Length: 210
Image (tube, rainbow, N blue to C red; front, side):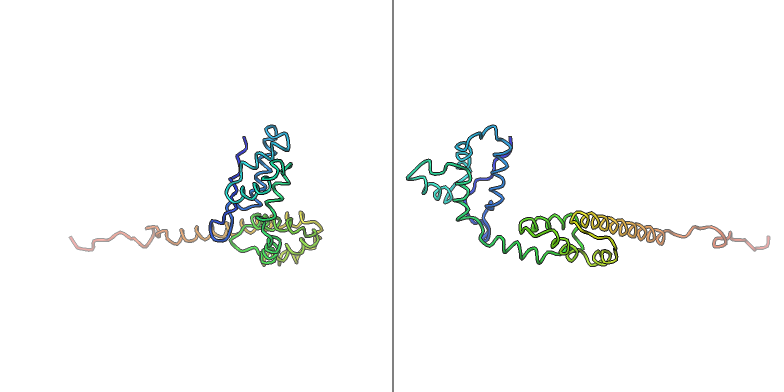
């Protein structure tokens, strides 16, 4: 059985954000209904289920519509759209655009992790692929940008560019790992005491006459 989404109350718990946030909650609702579709075969069943995941001011808002007609909401989308009018973040797209503009890979972030955030924002903003190819080149680490500029390869798809950058990231990690290993071995050699052999330790000769 797929887990239930949290009960959505619309309350702001940390002074800034709702918990749970509205859009992730909506996605969880859709996942639940899809994964357990055999339990929610009708629109009425899906709508009734969503009502069980609402509480507080949110449920009061829904009941305001249902007061005159208990069957006011006939589909799942009609419920979610009514909630979206109040609880969806109207600045979400602008916030995503700002986040995308500011996004840069830093030295502590592996490329796959960076690319995951890059593509998440890009898909939301629906940028064309040709724009994303150029943006990605400018947002990766400086040394990656330099290597890319030296390639004669034409990166005409985002997938090609992504695969090349993954290879560069792996090469960089392998290089630094080998350097670190060599440094450790060098330090270990320096700390090893010199062997006590050869002319440094000649036996003492007793020169006393008998």
